[in-house]
Image (cartoon, rainbow, N blue to C red; front, side, top):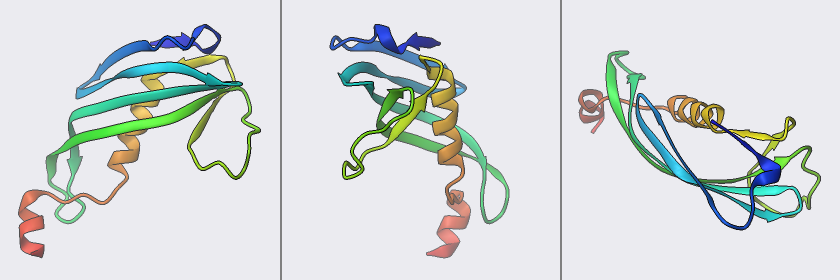
Length: 120
């Protein structure tokens, strides 16, 4: 699912995507200049190997996602602290954003319940 960034206005543009057992739901809204605000909630489960025993387990996901998408190169104020994703084709590819967020979660250190109880 792609949205043309130039068509995003101050009226929130809702979206909802499904990837496996993950639901990604939120909206895009024009903020200022070339910046589009993305606010979303990601919820569900990801199949992931435990970082201790390597057995697959279902990792519960319940994350709030908020960042800006810049239509082109972001050249804003360096003193401002927020995440900006640059889009160079004028589109927000929601499938790509969802997959990136899933991979980001998977890259963290996660252990299954069995190994977690052994650590305590």
